[in-house]
Length: 182
Image (cartoon, rainbow, N blue to C red; front, side, top):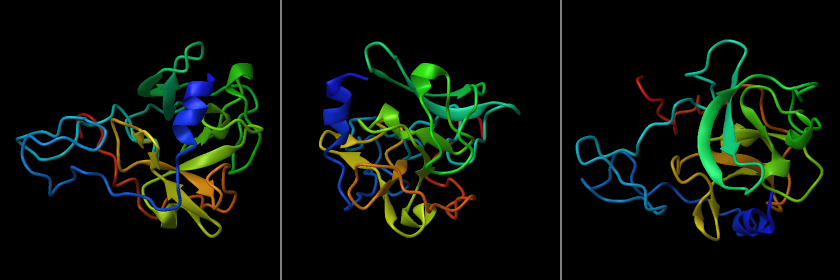
């Protein structure tokens, strides 16, 4: 990833913000990221899959963030086949440039941080991250995931690395993400 993406994430702080535009949002408003909130439902547009629960992906594929690996441009979320020797628990090694990813419900922190790649869980709240970490949802530029402002990554208390203590099953059950067609 380019330095721009790293700088974008480094503004992440332990003080997480709630999405501007959840169910209680005013009709026709926008979220902090600028995403248009539906006037009919008062919620943000849905994702094609839920990275916390993997809903929306066929068996054998994992819902994960999609970046252009050359430009570092964020492209949203999608369902991807496994790589080679994927990490199966938080803090297992991963390296997307070498086709080594993470199991369902996690992503590789090297996509976001200039550190050795470690698997970290997606999260909706701090409970999803266990002790010693928090759900980082915002950056100095706004929402970490512009199309899913309630979604974050479990990071340690320095906001610079994955946290290794997150539970295997998300206590939030991925409620911060709506999947298209569900």
